[in-house]
Image: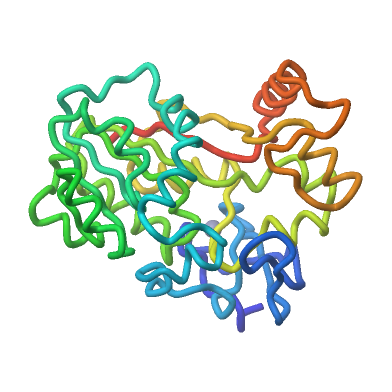
Length: 300
Ligand SMILES: [Zn+2]
């Protein structure tokens, strides 16, 4: 155990329990790692972590490798077209707050799909993105662009009134120091909306290892549930304004997993093509905490 896992980066505990051992996802559905990986759960704060030797280092996100691995377009426009359709979910997490006339920052914004949806409301827009391929596009949109939080800090320390960080924390080397640096950018009383996949996703239990080897992936170092995420954000000094689970897929996706062992994404199965049914399914999972994503609204 010691060989694979150091003390927990979040709570300091040295006690880990293996929860999964085997090949995991490397890219799109069906692509698995060559070697076996280990996922272990911290005995104290309950975060789950991939063994470090299987993880991608931070330089991996600086060029197009990451998007290519995901089979996603690596040019700004292609990326935006694919990501615009998911922004309603991110915008819903902001409601009923307003960012009008506020200084905002998006940490890990990629080509800035979310920012494009909100930037006209803000007084100042800061875009933080390690992949420099997107920087020209972001600059043309009048964003102040940085490749890391550290490089933005000299100018923006304690100035950001509303920060956003969607689907990034699961990749970073140390979630606690990552959150602390976001916090350093923020004005006292400022808010942060942050999202990450939910390790308590219902399919983790319903479909077991077949789903787990899809859910766990080499690009994600950490896997949070509601409690472990709350522990982590509080330890970083934030107070929790709101925490919720959000489910992205209709019932057909779960049914296809159970029947065929594969996702359908947004494509409905015959007999289950019903927005009403999907709405109920999503609402049900969100109410019992088994939806596939976590959204936290935090305050400094
Ligand atoms: Zn821990």
